[in-house]
Length: 97
Image (cartoon, rainbow, N blue to C red; front, top):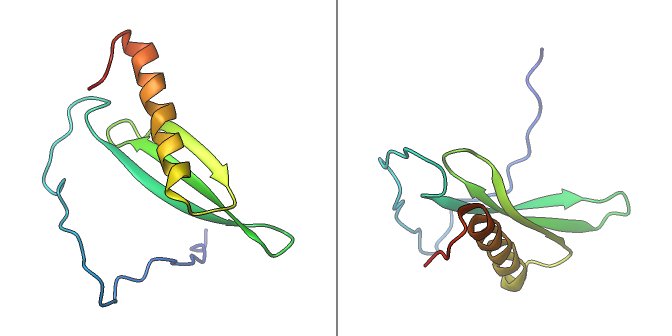
């Protein structure tokens, strides 16, 4: 199969602060030890864009929480995180601190 064309939306060649990779070299041994967040841009047929805010378990790659919205507001990512925490509490039967 031919390689798919990909569109890169992240530009790392900028003058802004680049944060250190705090998880480089970390070995994960089970789920729910490390969650990562991501925002995916989804083009719509009408020319507009929506944003999928994801919280993903780094070990299992399971999506723990998500919100689809038309904004990049931090509140959407926080809602996805709250969804992930609620799901983890339900599965574990306890509180996460």
